[in-house]
Image (cartoon, rainbow, N blue to C red):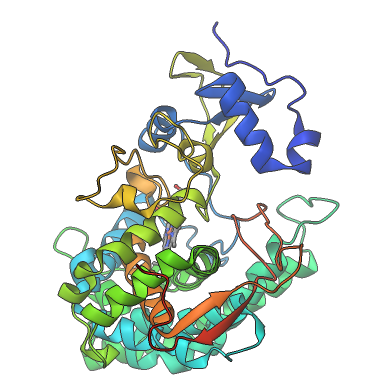
Length: 438
Ligand code: HEM
C-alpha cells in the first residue's frame, strides 16, 4: 500500500495555528497529496484536486450542515428531486440567463459606490454585503425580493453565529442555541416564501427569475414539489451574497494596494461603460477585459472557498496513492493556484496573465475558485458579473487606500472561507487627471 507522505510536525495543532502556512508547507514539501492526520488527506495541486472533485461517486460531498432540510414526515429529498432542483436553478443561473439581466445586476451593484462614505476609513465588508444581498435576492425573486430581503439578512446572521469557532464541537443532534437560532430563521424565511410560491403557482404568473424557473415543470422530471423548493432556497439565497462579498473584500484591498491596476480599470470603465448602469449590456461587460482579468487574478490568489471537503466511503486510489475507507479528503484550491508549474511566479499579482494579448509567457493554469465537476458553483456567472461591475464602477469613481500605520486594518480568517473581516478602506473621489497611468 502506497500512502501519501506525512508532513513532519504537520498535525492538527500546527494546522489550527496557521492553516494557510501549513497548506503551503505540505504542498512544497510533500507534493500532490499529503497526509495531515491519520485518515485526513490534502489534495494540494491541480491534478488531484480536479480528480477528487470530478469523481463524485468515490469522493462524495458531505451534506452541508448550514441549512439542512427542515424536518417533515415525508423525509429528505431524493437524489432525483435534488437533480431536478439543481437543473431548474441552473436555467436561471447559467451565463445566458445572467447576461439577459445584466442591466438590473449593474444598477443594483453600482449602489455600492453610491453609498460608500468618502474621505474616511470605513469598515467595508458590511456595506458590500448589504448591497450584494439586495442584488442577489432580487436576482432570485424579482419583485418579491423586498418581502424576502429582511429574512435573507437574518439567514446570514444565523450562518455567522453557526460557523463561529467554539471550544467544543457538539454532535450534530444537540440543539445548541446557534442551531436553534438557525432553525428559527430558516422557518421564518420559509414561511415568508411559501405564500409567494403559492401565489405564483395559482396565478400562473411564475416569473422569469430563478424562483420562476424552479416553478416551471420540466419535461424530464415534471413539477418540483413545494417543499423541495422551500428547502433548497435558504442556502442558495445566502450564497448569492455571502461568498461574493468575501471576494469583493479581497478585490477592494487589491485595488488599494495596486493603484496602477486600479487606474487601468478606471480608464477601461470610463471608455466602455454606459453612464446609466441600467443600460449595461453583456457586450459592455465582455469588453471590460482588464477588469475581468483583475477579478480572476484576485480570485486565483485569494479563493474565498480555499478548502473543500470530501469523504472517501470506500478504499480508493488518488494519484498514485491509496486512500483508506472512511477518510476525509481536503481539496485545496489555494495551494493549487500557487503552483509555479501552473502559474509562473504564482505569488505575484499579475492580472495580465489572464489577457489573451498579454506579452507574458504565462498560460493560466487550472482555475478552481468555483470548484469543478458535478458540484461546481451554480452561481459562478452571477458572481463574476456582480464582481466585475462592482470593481469597474468603484475604481472609476474612487481612489482607494488603506488606513495609515504598520498594522493591516483587517484579519485574515480561514475557518469558513478565506476572508478579511474588519477590512477598513478609504475612498477618495478621483479627480480629473488623478491617475498613475503613463
Ligand atoms: C465569488 C463568489 C463565489 C465563489 C468563490 C464560489 C465558490 C464555490 C465553490 C468552490 C463551490 C464548490 C463547493 C464544493 O465543491 O464543495 C461552490 C458551490 C456552490 N455555489 Fe458558489 N461561489 C460563489 C458565488 C456563488 C453564488 C453567487 C451563488 C448563487 C447561486 C452560488 C451558489 C453555489 C451553490 C448552490 C453551490 C453548491 C453546488 C453543489 O453542491 O452542487 N455561489 N461555490
